[in-house]
Amino acid sequence: MISADVVEKGELEITLVLRGVPLEYANAIRRAVIEEVPTMAIDYVVFLDNTSALSDEIIAHRLAMVPLRSDGALERYRRPEECRGSSPPEDCYTSLRLEAEGRSGEEVAVYSRDLKPQEDPEVVPVYGDIPLFKLGPQQRVDLEAWARLGRGREHIKWSPVTVSVLTYMPKITVSPERCTLCGLCAESCPTKALAIENGRLRVDESKCTLCRQCVKVCEPEAIELDWHKDEYKLRIESSGALKPERIVLEAVAQIKRKLLDFREELERALSAKGAGS
Image (cartoon, rainbow, N blue to C red; front, top):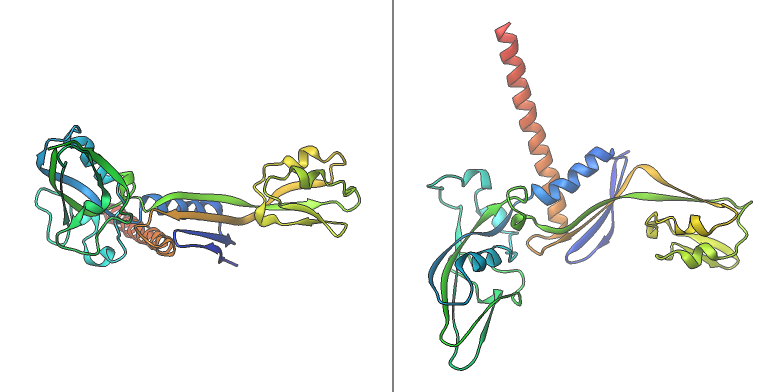
């Protein structure tokens, strides 16, 4: 039976336990989280003035890596594959403006909060305190940054996550005949998955990382480590562009879309082969 349980959830992270799911499917979700879920990011920058110590290319690269809020953008803007070409259609791009100048006699630090939306007030930097560059006295930067939806497989700046990890669910078996309750396994466990409580060895498999330190120190060889079949833990951490739960749902939707596209292509190829014979 297939199931997915949320075991931990925060503002930027979520941990799921997937049961009854083959490894290939679980890993497909992990990869789709990184590569297939679209977010907004700055695609190109038009410089109107730049007398700073940094070149246009360096500033543009730093701007591109600033995560932008994208929850509402998924409904309002066209998908990346619709916005390619020299003349993209409407609803592909939105612009942000940055204008800053160094004061007389002192440096001025420019932050991501200085990027001001020109058209869409919801597409703004997730964090306002990301340092971009410094301007010396009388130095000036004036630019327009254009953002669109993209996917992580095109460039990592469009990936909605900073962490996407799939791990086995540990299975700890303790032999009551061999265990002497010496406590060495509990002392060596870095995550405290093992502990001696009330004269018994307590086991918490959810904390185990399969580091095998307990097995190494257990002289009676009372502990065996394995993992549950078709049971995995998926942990993702959002960049802040999208809510973590939405990233997971969008990843599954992208996998479904790819499978439907593949089915259509396969049916077309088989039909053409049948007609040719």
